[in-house]
Image 1 (cartoon, rainbow, N blue to C red):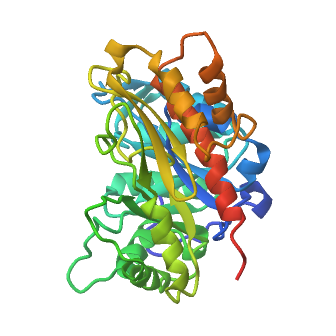
Image 2: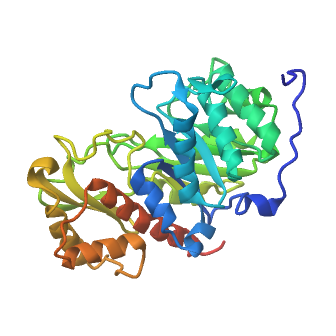
Image 3: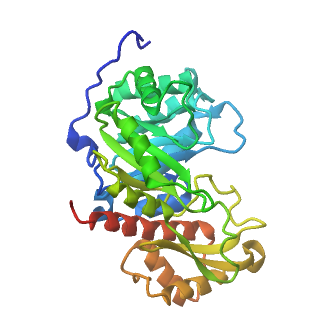
Length: 382
């Protein structure tokens, strides 16, 4: 049991073992769910793209898990992530899972989050455990704390700032100090991920408001890394008319860029959710209501080529036409740009029937990873 009287100073792994941590404002943090498409995008990412990004992988649990889970099931989840990230460092979080959900093992039952960490260690994966701020139970924080102590790679605090309301008389800095104390980790050994989540177009978010919060949070001390994450991708694409090619402004990019003029002592790194909404898609992708779509990132927006009618009625053939629409745009980067661009090019001219939405989720993510990491790397230095 970890004593609670004073923080434990956890020795960090040697810097080269966690490179590219710590993260600067030319580095990219992308939140990806452990779905087939995102895993394929990481698997096909170039070494240059990998040098410029650190993914936050959310292991998505089943909608209605029946405890106890089996150790084999959890091992399979982690193996799929391992196949995608390889030897690269990443943040490890969970989505739609109770961290204490029982997993049946040889010696009794373990909490699922602890079992995930154990399976990742077996594969020598270079992960940083993530602790959600204010949504974490004591058991959740204990599991993260034990992982930080055992692996020495620090922790990441994921602070959903727009949904957290500190208690009366307390500020963001107080909330964060309390979590660091509970985790027994010093601020220099922690990454702060300030998560704005979905940025609804009808809700005004001013860069200076975010900057004010960042100033307060930085009063805690010198965070190992500081990142601001957000997305403008809605859960449903009804904002784009069926059978058309529309666009969704990348408000998260504009908001982050605006922080540069907010007199911050430290410019945070940029993060987003790639081409997805923070909520996971339905398990039955391609079901009764989904429309075929391909999402393609540009410097300022996400192009969305959207089909007509439910994809299970219209069939995957319409993806060929969506690919042809994207290739006709000046923003199309060409088949050599990324694995995703090659997939689009191949589908547009191939007689073979296109695959389902998982492929296009991966293709769009693949293009996005290179586009955003290059966009950040090409920013002029102050």
